[in-house]
Image (cartoon, rainbow, N blue to C red; front, side, top):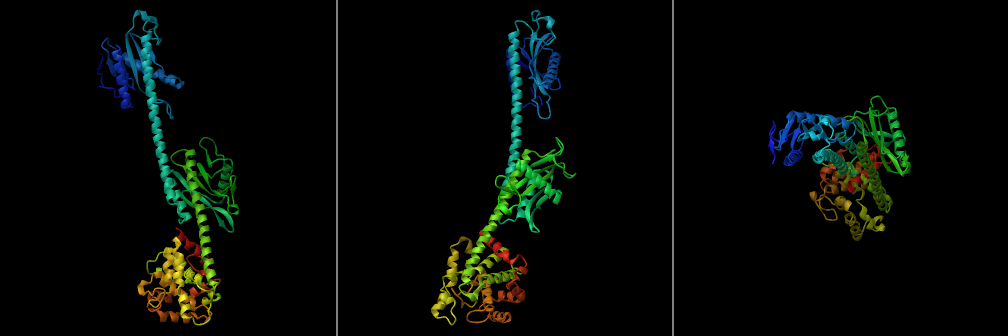
Length: 577
């Protein structure tokens, strides 16, 4: 039975080998010594690290080390020729078999051997053919079968080593790829979680650029979108990060070449001078470049640039000068294409959401106009109350916490404050003269009717208090519930004041319109009884004449913040979130 003989190193602890590989070497050594042969392990520097002696004969350490070094050299020559590494035979005083444990080739070239295993089959006899000693030729004797057996053992060991190392390399590559894919998924998830239709295009697209530059190192990245400029549609920079020079000429060149690439069925445009000269002319600062399109469903005249397959190029994403590697590759294209697709979906959803808001606010205005049309003297009343309510709310917000979303809701409540009149007889609404108690009771039901209508619409529930309470009074003499003071919600107080101001300054069937000064005097007299004193004083202290100019035809565009014509659409977005 063989045993370990320590020669400098107590066990097989060669650098570059895993624990499993060292155990395989030790196990092989034990099997070989049981068969009566000595076995040695030669390190990568050609030194003898381990010798396992079967006890039948002694081996020459120098001869074993030399056989290992020779096996390294021969293996290197054969590897360059692309031939599998065989087991080599050496015969001088002893018959030796040597097989290098060579690392498999990698992209950067061939690795150095991890070591070599040498089996000493003992002294050569005369029958082994003395004339062939030292020539590396297989002996022609009765030991052929023994040589073949040990050679196959070494061959299997070497192959197993290479298979193991290749497997480990593949596992490492898969791990790196999984880590990269995970980072991409995190990036796409981060972008998708911010894909809210209420988010502005600029904020979302900037987030996409910033997120990409955290993962893909580039000198500059930009997103260009179609915008209407001077009556025509053109691509302009909507977001970007880093250093990138995009002027009108560069934009036109990028778009034209990207459109050509997409028309040929490619995902995007890649160009560099790494493996060949540039295909196109670019500014001198560009070493490599990638561009991918932002595509949407074909919208006819809405988009100026069309491609095959029923889609339109509504923008593009471009990146220049990869930093951590020579060029962009297909992996980069796929990542940028995924992000660009998300950006295109966001923009398309935003457009559809705006269409929905415009449809919704159009429906609301059609509804309020139909109510106002029941009485020619109140035509336009609902929109004016909405505007005056917004004016008052904005003045309050200058000194007290009142966010923009609440102002939007106050505006919409003002727009719909009389929606309950849809259930009131037109003859009562248009009556020229004093109302009977029954008719007055009928009129006073319209806030409750309006609130009941709006409660059935989930998105409208936040504006119900304004509709229900706009005829309540601070002194409790209002309707429908006779609320007093702070029992009346802020929205109801504001709309009640706006409703009264417009009613006083509008011509009615039973009286002419009051002057602004007369109306303001009436509001002053009503502070603390009909109107909330603080809110009334805020209106009185504001620029009433400017408000009056805004209300008049042709002056609505002078309103700051946003154009009055677009405000209803913006306000409706608050309800649809």
